[in-house]
Image 1 (cartoon, rainbow, N blue to C red):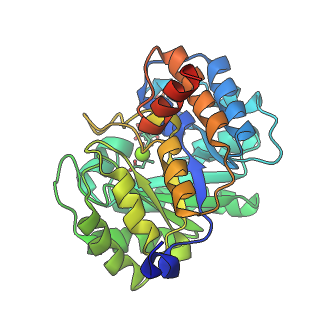
Image 2 (cartoon, rainbow, N blue to C red):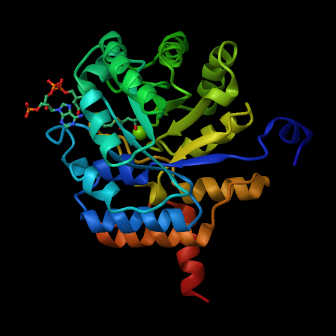
Length: 307
Ligand code: HMG
Ligand code: MG
């Protein structure tokens, strides 16, 4: 390890596993039981933060319509289960099934915000005030997503100052962390650095997470860039599942297996059993009738087959 890496890389990284939500929201429908099995397998592999569903309109995202049933079927006292809650209705439904952490989501791009949640950025912030109030009353933490931080499918380049402005609005509302979404996976390492130059001048690194989709194969490099800036929370999806229903052509998040392999190589603590994680990915991919979008997962599969 170089001196530079030793000085700046975090010693421990928190993985937020979003495969059961971000992944499965954009795959063909899988059964409630398959989702429950996936989340249980992820927890058994040592993942302690799992986004388990979304309390959004079933007309908008039918794949998440059974989130209530999925979460009700889980008994994972040591796992932080989170869910998307775009409005008070979603927050109340998530609370009813015992969710202890909400995620609200807006965007750095007006056009994407309209397509995704049918309102302007400003309106989304006003809408979230109800969610925050409800969360406060029930002692629930709230995470904030900002989509399109490195580019928008409708507006192209996004000014980092706009990402800063929206992130600050979410922090002022009371979010404990901002997850920076490269929703369509167009960012490159220099863009990540430029964005973090702007954000880290105003926001402490402990309040930021990265959420990179891998459409152009840059996610892992971009994560490494962010780790070198001291970011210590990474969102990822087992087997690289998914995409975004409101960003055509966007592929899934970076695969959790690939991130874990990277962290292992860097000597960064993560608490996850890679083989058990890969097996969780193989099982959900069997249910989906597809191959994992993870080189690490495929390499492990070959290695085991050849043993
Ligand atoms: P709207 O149509 O503006 O809202 O949708 P509305 O209040 O007028 O409600 C319309 C209908 O939806 C009503 O039903 C409501 O009851 C129902 P109807 O009377 O027509 O039968 N409704 C709900 N049902 C269930 N749960 C709710 C809920 N709220 C209203 N919570 C809304 C606004 C936000 C609801 C809608 O636009 C929506 O659900 N959007 C979902 C968008 C979504 O889930 N996108 C994918 C996730 S975000 C993402 O992937 C990006 C991220 O990964 C980060 C990144 O990669 O960048 C997080
Ligand atoms: Mg996403």
